[in-house]
Image (cartoon, rainbow, N blue to C red; front, side, top):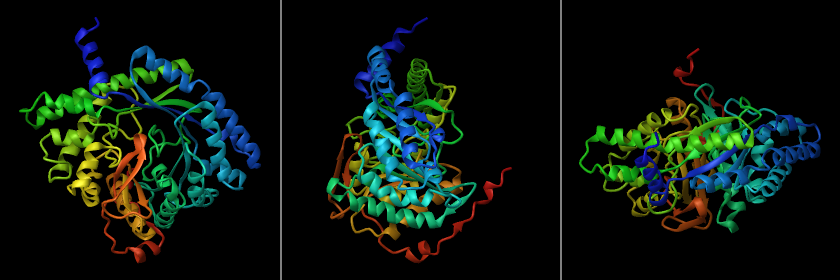
Length: 451
């Protein structure tokens, strides 16, 4: 029997509490497009993406209208392009321009997969693609890039870490006239998942089906509203409330994912449970933590609150969907979260505190704006620290920092849209250069020997 209360509750979540589907992401394998001739390979890629994703945007819009559920983005994730560069050689930027052309043809918001997986070393095509990332991001609008530099099984590739510090900085410099947008579309991973629907880290892993539909949900405002109804509840009550709310949010995501997969005639992949905030007031993960009892996000106790939130979201979500994957937890991107922005502006939230929070959250140091004169070695040090947290704790961590060229602490950088805006945050400028330039590989931890 249909429960009228549940229907009204869902309507209220959408209208008043910013519940939405953050993204429908179609994963497309491009392995069949590999060719020794890069021009032929690019032609195959364009044809396959346009064929598979021809109706993706239209389908998302129709579901949105029919069910009344906002679907903010329609996206595509493809096979890591470094794998195709290995076969064809040539300038990898040609692939980026092909992906850009295809994304414009089918009308998606972003296309991810200008990526390389180098956690254990550089294979053919990897170094060429990585060094081309700044140019590729500067010459396209919709391309997102990611590089996986470590894993619990492999350890951390410190040669790749050193390279990525330079790449992040160059991506900012080459797009300085565009608000340093380049590194906002670039993420450096440890333990990158192969089925992540969220940008900038989405790519279609080699173990995935030829074409799938993955969905990422949102809903921080819904969780906060639920907690407002139990102002005197104890911590167990808080955890139970988050868990029940996450279940309801995920059921909406499961509905949209299955419906989109059926209409597009491709398999349903996963629902990513991650609470994805926006700069809009009332749609903030930081505000959830404050509703638990913190004066402001960043106060002592923040890491404990975030651990509770992340765990409860996963427990509620896995009961609501038969296939859960991606990142699944709570994002803490500074520029994309109104509460995080306020805490950073007030000085309550520092990069060091954010790093501690990443030990228990869904991803890592995300959308953090740093001074424009931050050296490549310091950026590499930030990446290495975050990768170490992921490697030792067998979880996904990532770094997406934006050097604000020409700006310093207290200035603001504005990206617009879902990427938001934020203050330039203080970075410890003491140099890790000698450590970074040693190169080599940090060995995998003992817990990697599970076979």
